[in-house]
Length: 292
Image (tube, rainbow, N blue to C red):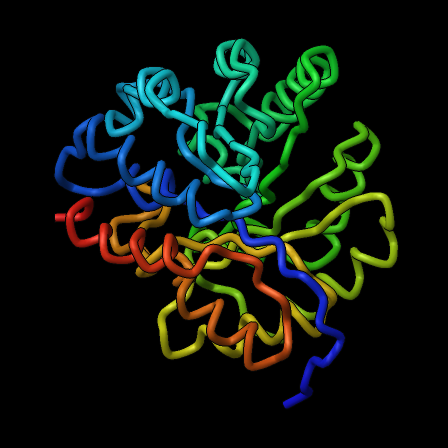
């Protein structure tokens, strides 16, 4: 295995929203606020904290605006940029009202079937939404993050190959998107796929930051992380305890990358992870109170 020694900083995107949205038991607003405050104190560079989507589709996220209103940023030593997921122009308009939100994240599936399941729109319709949302973001000083979901294949039999992935990345680049995260939505990606996709995309689009949102079992997590590192990736999404996954994907979800597992691995490879360790451990302890 190749050893990484350049001591670069990893940009960790902690995703409590992804962990909470499909949780089978209701999580109270008070609990969400306390948990997010602990994660803010830990100093993650980016916190995927909530979503402005239909409460009928994702009821667990119906209180995102209330949660945001109750977050207290005083005393937070390391600034964290908040990211909210949106699925249409209306959600983007709602998110743009809040100065605390820096990133809007849009899940764009390169699988037609999953795009319909996830946002009730075709890829063509969704791409038009992305164009409109990008204009909104530019007008409101926000950054749009595009998640290319089902980025390494899909369980529906829809056409997939590396050329399809590259074509959609090119379309996003033409809109001026600066951050694209390759999402292994149901954990299908092989390490070879991950590495080759990043090695193809990163040099071709130097103005774009490419991240990965990988879902994985614990058994093959290290191989996928290493493949992404060797592909040149420095932006990784994760969730404490590996909880979560997209509830619109399939019934048997493969969990998110475990943030604690990723951090341990990055440190063995000489990468810098600038977190408040005491606050991070407090957040880990809180997971047993949040996810019950």
